[in-house]
Picture (cartoon, rainbow, N blue to C red):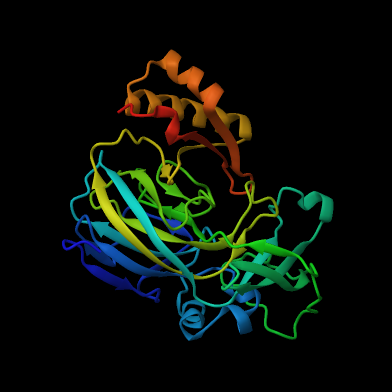
Length: 344
């Protein structure tokens, strides 16, 4: 931690979360200068899928005391104001670490999942975490047959009310912790559901945004008003069943105001790649948005012409489905840093 940084801790409590929405009129729960490191708790809204395994006292308190919920399901910690941030700036969020709060997570095959019509039911699978091997194994599953649907904000499935069945014997998946939802306040006033991603970020669900990466967001309001939640232990591209491996995470992030980057949409930087995100009502629209945004990013970042950027994107760019289950579908366009050599 640099000499000019100050560490703050932000606990996810009834007074420091907002459940299911972004809103530019929210009062910040913390204000910090650029360069500040903040340790913040993020809580999964799926903790009620197996409360004996996914809840502790602090999480139970959120479920019992936060009554203002919706229209989305995600519990978001914040907002955090970055004091120097002004509209037109770019907020860099450096993800320094992500640690599981409890040793279990949940996956829901939901009614908005891509193949729900093939199954005609919702099913929860609870996974256990092995931190030493950085992996997870399914512990049990159960069908959810109750109304309201399983992802209704605040749903709690008490032990003994469903038949927990063995699931996925001898199957192991690697952990890829990330925050599925991070973002700043939207440009438009009013309450915006936490489900669809947009220019403010939000529910992007790119599993590559783990520790050691930076997300960049165009700032729309003074202070930026950053919030985070929807923590994931692992997820595949597409998030096909409707959710990832959902589990509460303790995050450490660093905020920096950037005025040297041409960021017009949410952009992810990893050790090896830049990823530009596009969204749309279908994958064709998301693909077009991602392609046009990546074209402009390459032009402005490295001074290539549109013709040059277009050729590079086709020869050396990768366009991948981020998710198909969040209302607005997502495509991320990636280009390797090595393609630009020493070009600045």
